[in-house]
Length: 168
Image 1: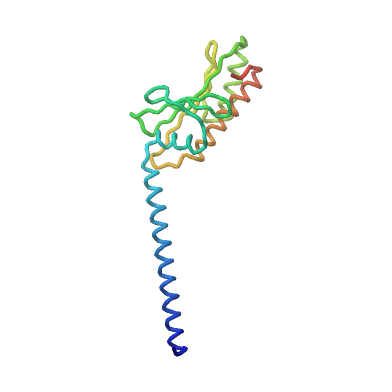
Image 2 (image 1 turned 90 degrees about the vertical axis):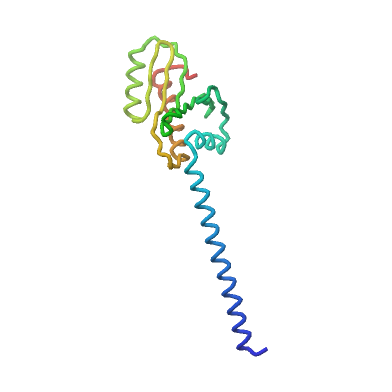
């Protein structure tokens, strides 16, 4: 076979390989976009449960729209409202035996101001702390949920230390 024909065949074969690789990349990108679109269409409730599964956070359904899960040895409740699919509430509480409610309320108020999107409620014998958020239907919640859980955990620890409480 003449060298020119070999070069033409080699160039043709190289072009076919390049086209095949290009088509493969396009198909992969298409599959990734389809997967992301399916993920974006999931209801918030399923996104949260998928997050808990992904991070090996044990949970159980305690009511039709309420789940209990454990994060850093603390028990939290995730409450889902099907009437408002963008609303999310994560809360926890612990019993207290502190009689200095004025100091406890002052500390809770300071922490709410410092943490900004957390709520702390002091009741007669309990401290309840929570995060309520509106989450867009197409929002990716992994980073946000990680942050919210860390803020809840750090708030509980800081409140317990500053108010000299026995946490949990």
